[in-house]
Structures are given as structure tokens and as C-alpha cells.
Image 1: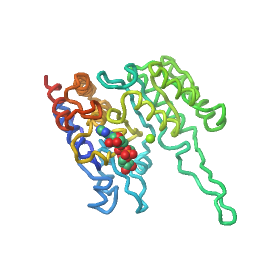
Image 2: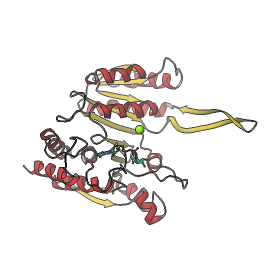
Image 3: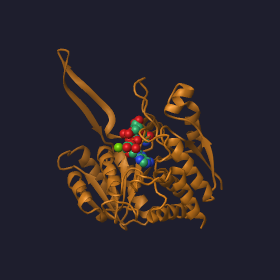
Length: 340
Ligand code: NAI
Ligand code: MG
């Protein structure tokens, strides 16, 4: 069956890497039909808002979006589009795989881990304020809101994801020794949920020690599930373990809708030069195809990307300093590999 996907080409390098990702996905023969809509600066210029109603409407209808990075407009009092989309569609799970690619200069070659980050509550619930006395700010307070429902659904998602993707182990990452209530509740519920998945090994790790272990020996990790702030930090750390921003993708998943994106931003420093690495957005497309049940096509695209990076002839300069390969040339090499 044909799947209709909301496509948001984004800002900065967004349109360049979107063209590359669309070319690769179309060459794979995946039954995808694009419903293109603007968001970010491009939308602000055309519609006077970074998130036009027609874009929201398209995502509401299609329930799946592939989104290139957006430049967050400075000033103007606009809410971040990413935060708005997460809240509007309750995209509670942020899933970020970090897998080694052969042929990169990354420090490790055996990383194959997935961070599952709670995306809607915790310390990022947005409940914060300054405390003033005699007109002067004397303190600030942020409240970490952790709910039973929130913990349960994210840990259950992580275990279900592990089972469905053939993974063996889930690490519940927390700081329950110090944050006895918020992290304590997350850990307690996490252990309860784990009992429903006797086929998946469960362990718990304290976040700071976990960060150290990820840097020393990342090969020991499989799935990591954790609260919002810890997941934000550990998933970026994991990207760094496999060669950086040009390579890693993430999914924002809710009960109804899902949005797929590169981990990186709009890279204004290289926008328009045609040298951005399209891999992260292509891998976001791979995650999207898996979500749509198009596993075989997803695997073929991933294998083609891996082959091109391993060969190292047609890779952008972030992967090989001095390379003159462009975004489009790398995409063409991936297409040629797909068709070989
Ligand atoms: P960035 O990720 O755009 O860039 C950081 C560095 O990585 C830059 O040197 C850039 O050239 C390089 N880089 C990023 N992606 C690359 C690629 N595909 N190929 C080669 N090099 C790449 O982060 P930065 O500069 O902090 O943010 C720029 C803008 O992006 C900001 O407006 C920020 O708010 C936005 N942003 C949006 C995100 C999203 O829409 N999901 C996520 C992160 C940032
Ligand atoms: Mg982050």
C-alpha cells in the first residue's frame, strides 16, 4: 500500500539533504508519496508563523512526518516548533540509535545501542520560575514532573522495541540514590514493567557511572531507557561515539503519530554550499520505513549507505577531510549502490 508522509524540507542545509534523502528513498522503490509543507524560518517568511496550520493539518492527517532541521527563530516570542509538535501530538518516545559505521574515524567500531528518551516530562516539563525578594532574583526553581503513566509507557515502549528489534538487554538509567522521588519512581516502575518481559535482560545503572561506561566501553550497551534530561545528554554522547552529527537519526513516537528527523540542526555555517552529509536524514528515512512496515526496503537503503561510507570514495568532507564530494554526489553513489 502507498504511504503518504508529511515532508518538511526545513531550513539551512535542510532543503539540500531533503533532496538527497528523497532521491534515495524514491530510488529504493519504497511506496511513499510526499505531502510537502513548510515549517521553521521558511514558513515564517511565507506564512508569518514557523508552524502553519496547513503543516499541522497535514501531519494530523498522515500521522507520519520526515522533518529536516529547522532554524529556531530568535526573538518574536515563538515557541520552538519541535516542542510544539511533541506536545501537540504527545510524541513521548525519542528513539535514537547509535551504530558504528565502517570507514569513519570514530573512536569505536562496535557501538550498537539505542537510547529511548522520555520526551514529554521530567525536568523538561517546563514548570519553572524565579523566586524574587525585594525586586531581586534570589533563586530559581525547576520542577521535574514524573508520572506513573509517563514512566510506564516509556519503559514499556523500550522493552517492546527491544523485543521487536531482536535486542537482548535494556538498561534503566536513573539517579535514584539522590533523586529518591522522581528517579526513584522511574526505577520502581521500570522494574515492574521489566517483569512483563522475561525474555529481555534488565539492568539498572546510575546515570553518571553510565556516562563513564559508555565512553570507556560502549559495546556493552544495547537499549538504554531514561528520563528526559538524562536521555538528552546520553543520546548526544552516543552520537559522538559513532562519528558525530552527520550520521545519527532519531524518531519521535506517539500513540498516534511519529516524526523522523536527523539529530543535527540546520548547520548555517555550511548551508548553500552543497557539502552537508545527507546520511543522518537518510537514516531518519530508514527508521520511518521500518515504522511503516517496509523493513526490507529499509535494510536495503541502510546497506547501501554503509557500503558507500565504507568505500570512502563518495563521502562528504565531514567524514573525510579534504573531500570534494557534494551532498548530491554522495546521494548518487548511494542510489548507484542500491541499483547495483
Ligand atoms: P548544527 O547541528 O546545525 O551544527 C553543528 C555543527 O555540525 C556545525 O559545524 C555544522 O556544520 C555541523 N553539521 C551539522 N549537520 C551536518 C551535516 N549533515 N553534515 C555536515 N556537517 C554538519 O547545530 P547548531 O549550529 O547549534 O544549530 C543551528 C540551528 O539548528 C539552530 O537554529 C538550532 O536551533 C537548530 N537546531 C534544530 C534542530 C532540529 O530541528 N531538530 C536540532 C538542533 C539544532
Ligand atoms: Mg539535545
